[in-house]
Length: 137
Length: 318
Image (cartoon, rainbow over all chains, first blue to last red; front, side, top):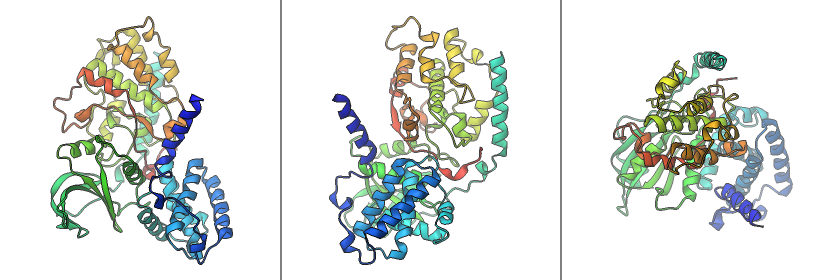
């Protein structure tokens, strides 16, 4: 039993930095109603695509979870047109990789994997917008 | 003897890698305008420069409206291909979570297109220490985990794969330091560091004071090839530690505690649990009084602190 408690504590320290923040406004909430241009189906497609990217880059599980967490928190506070949803996903994964991975993928690798739907500069610009909105993760 | 020959061989291979590693020296780091700004984002008035490093500058500033005195660290990433550096993302998100009397508090983050300003509370003596403790960023061209003196050659050479072995190297460095009283690879930059590591040296001459068993263990810890370097388990079973218990303040006893404090699993390693020698200002040659470590401070070594992990930009080997 004691061991279980320790595990719980450990997992909290690993994730608390990014997710279990004390401020409520930093948690994702039911945001789809406030998004005029996107819906649950689109989010599901995005997540499926990100899982493919994640496998392709051979990233850690934490990176994937953090990516989705960043996306949900960002969509909770910012309206995003559907053309930009994938861009949000890419930039979120870039940020999560930088946080979690020893060797995060390069921006240009994301550009290639998205079939050049977005250019280098757009990914970086979105990264800064997300960082700003989420108050630096 | 054959062991030493093999070591010399792997040293040669690593050196070849180093020579091929042109990128290592061509890395353009951030440059800041030579004159200091009058204000930062119109919110803070700049009163003076507190410090400077490869990351940018630290200014002493006054909040124009409230009069609060703060320290602002400006980090320029204009020339960074991957924009916001991962070290910065980690630094900010960790500092935002930390709230402790002994840790400098991050009050605010202001960002623009090309640089980020971290607003810290101003602790007159402590800020400099905070920055020097983070001396990964002091290094002009490599941002790497762990204090440089204790960095394993594979980290210095930008291997894309490194593991728990880097901590054993650090233990070897600290072990040597316990004997000689000063950093065994205490150099000014990573290039000199590599130079020192790869210089042929006779350890038995430098560590003449050390027992033969201790010297044997030290050689196993300071093995250049991470694959052949001794593991934590192997080191703990070494004959050097036979017939303990020993005096708790003895070298052997401390070394055991140090080895036992290391993460054994590689996933902890990649999470950034990196052994970091905590010798206070001793890490920073500029502030170190005489370069010697007080014997007591070696006890502080037994701490594994999260640290920033390496960044992608300088990949060269493999």
